[in-house]
Length: 95
Image (cartoon, rainbow, N blue to C red; front, side, top):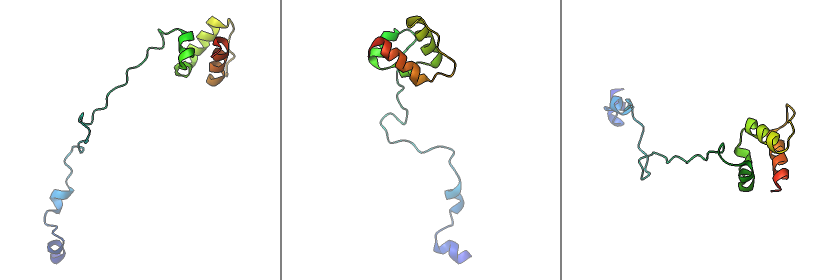
């Protein structure tokens, strides 16, 4: 076994196998830190604005239900899919 260790230069095997405890650095110019996207506050935006910008899908189901109740003056049945609610608002705003 001693010959194999010398043949494959494995004298420093322990040093090579010991983890350093750090991840390798990224080659990106900002040192691996991604820039955060600025969140759009949909709560303050008008529903018509969101429909025109094509951002109705970003609303939660509760927000969609509230918008339908406000604009269409009707209640949405339990079990209605989000996509169906988005389509209802798109038809209402004609977008």
